[in-house]
Image (cartoon, rainbow, N blue to C red):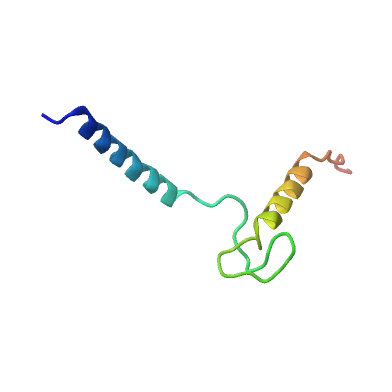
Length: 76
């Protein structure tokens, strides 16, 4: 009979496998990479969306501000 610590180790290993699988299938949040920083337009390596954490944070802050800004009524 297996002891409790072996069962716990096996459960932890299975949980880690499921976690890694879920992370590998997760779609990235935000816009697709264009080759340029979304905040400052600097040229970037393939797959990158921002130069650094500061540019990413600034861009996210701007996007939240735009989303929360009052909108003008549509002119008809």
